[in-house]
Structure formats: C-alpha cells, structure tokens
Amino acid sequence: MKTLSGTQQNITASNNCPKCHGRGWVLFQTSDGTSELYGEPVMLDYAKRCNCMANAFVSEDRTEFPTIYQDCDIYKFDWSAYGCDTEDMKRVAFSFFNQFEKWQKESKGLYIWSKTPGSGKTYLSACVAKSVMLRTQKVVKYITPVDYMDKVSIGYKDKTIEPARVYRECSLLVLDDIGTQIQSEWHSQELFRLIDYRTVNNLPTIITSNYKIEDLKLDERTKSRIMKSSIVLHMPEVSVRNKKAAAEQGEFVNRILGG
Image 1 (cartoon, rainbow, N blue to C red):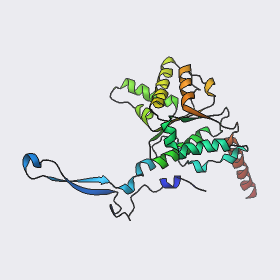
Image 2: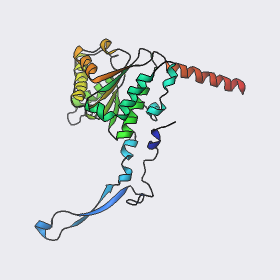
Image 3: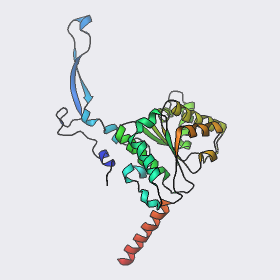
Image 4: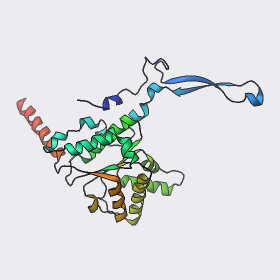
C-alpha cells in the first residue's frame, strides 16, 4: 500500500549529503558590512540549515492532532470499511490532497459530517490534512472550537501574546467537532471572525461536525460563511469505530479460547 507517512521517519540529516556531511547545517563566512566605515571588513561565521533538512520541521508533527492520529495519511484511509459506494467522496478527498493549491486559490475547504459517532470524520480530516502537509510543506493545525476559544481568551487576558493567531493564519486548519456547543454571543463572534478571516485570505479549513451546516447551533452569518467556503462530504452513517472494536474483540476471544 502506498503511504506518505514513511517520510516522517527520517528527520535527521543524511550522512551522504555533500554539503553538510550529516551535520544538518552548512557553514558560511560573510562580511559584517563595516568596511565602508572602518576600513577592513570583519568576517563572520554563520550557519544555515542544509537543504537536506528541508522537511524536518514539518515532519516533526506540530499539527496538534491527538496522538492517535499521529501516523495518518490519505493512503491509509479504508474506504471499503463502510460497505457502500464512497467513490465520489474519495475523489473529492484526493483532489483536495493532490490539488490543494487550486482549492486554496478558490478559498475552498471541506465540511465533513455525519450524525453517527465513530464514522471516521476526524480520522479522514487527519488523513487528508497530514498528507497535504507532507506534500506541500505548508503549516497545518488542528483545534476544536472549545480549545480555540480558550486560546482567544488567553490573548484577551494577556495582550503581550496572541496564541489564537496561528490558527487564523495557518495554511490549512482542521476545526474539529463544530456546532455541538452552546454558543454565547462572544463565542459566535470569535468563531465568525476565525472562519471569515480564513475565507477572505484564501486559507482553506476542514471542518467536522455531527450536523448538517443548516442545523449547526451557530448564527446565520457563520453558517453562510461555512456554506460558501466548503465542499460538503456526508460520511456514511456507519460506525467504523464500533465495527473495528467488535472485530478486535472477536479476535481477542478467539486467541484466548484457542490458546
């Protein structure tokens, strides 16, 4: 099976690199620019990260996905687990992965929803987002609405920091489990600001939810922004999590009884 996640395993410099010889850094010398004022220039040594380490920072997973989604990639997603035709959803997901730049230019993201818990909404979002990250080297972040509000609140309390900014400005954001929380006017305002900023600035968002967009517990302008900026994927109403758990339980019992 083809997989992207293998590229995450090697985040150290190659010993065969002719530039850094395995150090990960290339040494340079340059003038400090003082020659015009004081005569002889002073030569300074400095180091620059080698090109062979270009993927290192992205490969160090800083997306903030829960650890159970650490090794996700789009080639690992089992579309056959649903027992129904998922070809159209698969084509859209792979288009987002393979043609992310086009989606970004049009400011289009994904809205992945299903009423059924365990249907794979968050897992699919992780597979798609992490694959985009590895292919494009762009900054990808994950957060829930509740945690985002906490970040915003911290910024209001301490004006010297703005922890919510990275989620507004990252190239791709996964906003997980939206619309289940009771929204105060302040929460609604901040969520609208987040989605509106990203839409206006061509920054795609992958949103997951248990609700259709029109049924979200959000104000109308926020739902309108989501509709405008999202291609909807309605996941099959099948709990893949329960099916997998049942299979694992059966295998365990067979091993115990067979042992």
